[in-house]
Amino acid sequence: MPELPEVEAVRKALEPLVTGKRIAHARVVHPIAVRPQTPAAFARAVEGQTIRGVQRRAKYLLLQLDRGWLVVHFMLDGQLILLPAGENAPHSCVCLTLEGRKSTVLGFVDLRHFGRMRYTDDPASIRGLRRVGIEPLSRAFTPAALGSLLSASRRPLKLLLMDQSRIAGLGNIYSSEALWRARLSPRHRSDRVGAARIRALHKAIVGVLRAALECCVAPPPDFRDPQWWFQGLDRILRVYGREGRACRRCGPAAPRGIRRITQSGRSTYFCSHCQK
Image (cartoon, rainbow, N blue to C red; front, top):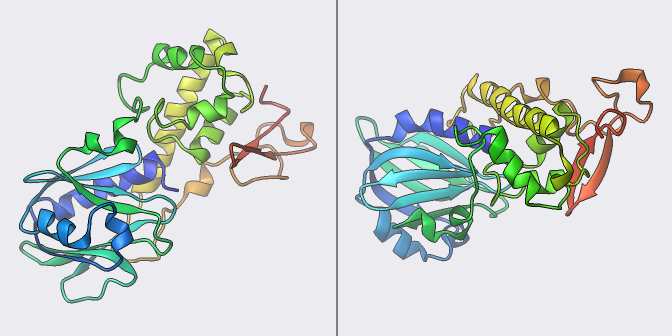
């Protein structure tokens, strides 16, 4: 699932390509993509409107229109493609024909049909957006703010970090990576993290998200290639997906290497030797 860095990279790359373009036509290929709206209601709402800007909130992409918003949630495999008008957008669930100096087709692709593209007058009307917590790359996300969140919860650290109502946009991959950087066990109880380790965790969260964002924008997303995915992320990952391999900090000192456990149905990767 795309997390904050991937969605922010899409926002940065997409905004100059679609801002100022008018939605001349909307075609819904798979009605599930715009639920709970009907395809006809979705088309009536967006056709004739101009895209005024592109924003991000947590893992959501928001396209601001003259009136209202298009809200995209990619879920597991959702993707946007942008092709010249007249070219087929393969496997698209929703196709928006955009008029400008050069007409294009913005397609929302999701082969498994988990993702959504919805029109709304107010993003706060969408439950997932209404409940999102603090943005971890904002000025409001300070060690003190993180400490307040931790002290109010008895949950394991990994589960709290992934709670979108607490910290927006931080998911399975980067929460595991941040905990490794901070040398904290994913099973450590949130309200039992001391001040020094809170500061270390705050630094780790911000650091891993910024590093991932740098990878995601260089090179930027290629919206013409439906098979494109973010390059270079493997270079910054230290634990995620590395079960059984040596810890990049401990080496031979941790003979079991990186372990994988399941927390609330999701895989967590960590080193039991250096993460306490």
